[in-house]
Each structure stands twice: as structure tokens, then as C-alpha cells.
Length: 152
Image 1 (tube, rainbow, N blue to C red):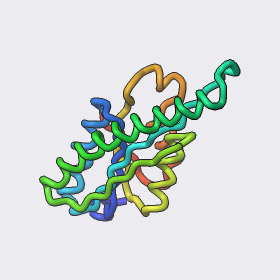
Image 2 (tube, rainbow, N blue to C red):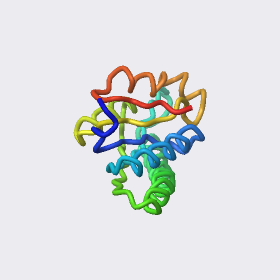
Image 3 (tube, one colour):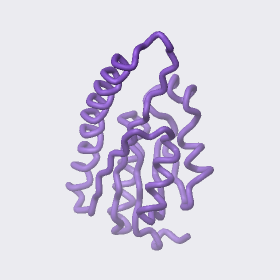
Image 4 (cartoon, rainbow, N blue to C red):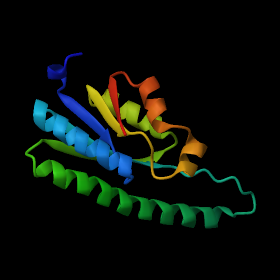
């Protein structure tokens, strides 16, 4: 694929330093090639395995988790959107909720939106999350239908 074939770029953001670098790279590419930019934050569904926790408590905990996650997601996506708007690029902001797999959510969105390039950072918010979920960037590189640029 030639760079002039890029029509739509997806950037995955999670508030980490690497995601911020990826967002800046994606904005620069979008500006250079005149492409649409999709900014995506994925809210993963937490996995609990404690039989001592009752169902009512679990519902309350999940409700609080998603409320806080939506607030964080809006801040993260809006920060990138402001950067994009200041550069005159067409932008679409997406927050994927209840994702059992961050990789699947990103790959699926890229396919549905006919994305030509996915831009993302090498590491997310914490090493512990990476240990639990595996490397999101590696998973996206493996399963995406399009090119993937991993930014350090």
C-alpha cells in the first residue's frame, strides 16, 4: 500500500504516554495525507472471579467502574480531538464499551470503518494490565486487516 492510498486512519488511545505519541503521529499523518482520523478509546469489561462477592454488589461495582471509565474516556478522546480540530482534519471520536477484548474491539472497528492504517503505542497505561491482557499492539498487528504503525 502506498501512503497516498490512506483515506482513513484509526488511532487507539488510552491516556498513556505512548498513546499520546501515537495520537500526535496519527494527526501528523492525517494532516499530511488529508485523511479522516478516527480516535478510539476502548473500555474493557473487567473480569471478576470472586465467589464471595454478591450479585448486587457486583452490579454496583460495575456501574461505578463504567461511569468512571466513560468520564476518563471522554477526557482522553477529547484531548486528541482538540489537537485534530486545530489542524483542520476531519475526526470521528469513538468509545467502545463492554469490550471483552481490546484487540477485537479495535480490529472490528477498523474493519467496519474501512480503515487503511491503525496507529497505536507500544505500551498501555500499566505493565500489570499488559501482563493480564497480553500485548494489545501485538494482537492488533497479528489480526488487523490493514497496516499497523506501532509508535514508541
